[in-house]
Amino acid sequence: MVKTTLCMAAICTVLAAPATADTLELTGVIRDFKRGDWTGGHLDFETAHLSGRGGYGKATGLVTMNLSEDDKPVYNPVRPSRDTILNEASFNQWYRDDALVNTSSPMKLTLSNGRDEPGGVYSYSTSSFFPIDGQYFGNQNLSHNFHFTYELRTTFTYQPGQKFTFIGDDDVWVYINGTKVIDLGGVHTAVTGSVVLFDGKVFVESADFAVGGVVQSISTEMASALAAAWSAAGLGAVPVQMQANGKYIDLHLTSQQTCTLDFFFAERHTTQSNFRIDTSIQLIEVPPTTISPLYD
Image (cartoon, rainbow, N blue to C red; front, side, top):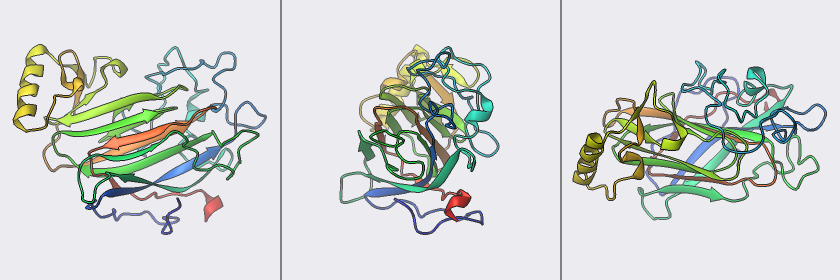
């Protein structure tokens, strides 16, 4: 799981070569935390059941629509009713190295298209996503290590018709060009978030976004025009995200434009850890630029 060539002291500026095979190898950063229902643990992990901590279930709007200047999710001061995050300071530790609360290392995911040639849908799927069992802070009297985060930074070349889907638990946020397009926050069972890229826009899961700001609604007339353009491009059945009353974010993408896709995951509670990515986007990893001093 650990890539041998790491970016420890210097910032990496060279991207991996574009995918031309039947697999995508993507290296991100995993961070381990102590369970928060124990003394000295992080109070955002294994605490949703405690009094006043929000309870279980999907909670959209835990983070704002845009990444921070250092490309991390931003704590939303306007909190949803099912808030499972203690405060802004605690959240800012999820995806940043902090020797007081977490340890980190690089971790690679390999997505396969199940073919002997490039193209199609690349997938990674497991109902037991426990990549650091027995490591770092350990399992803490549990059957697995359930308290960690994982982030991936990637680039890709935009082509109309691309899709990205995640199914799993717990929190997941996905950003394209720094704008949030999948919002699966909270401590929950496996749920699905999926986007379609077409006509320079990102068509999102309607239930996870409210119309306003950059999020717009698809009119009946627009849906008809989109369906005609989709069919003319020979892309098959029109995705549900592009139907009337669906929602989209216009990123003004142009064909062959280089874009970023940032993926943030958190596992915060027993007893499940489902993790599935399906994508037709040929993602290219951006190697991690910082690793905890514990791994120098």
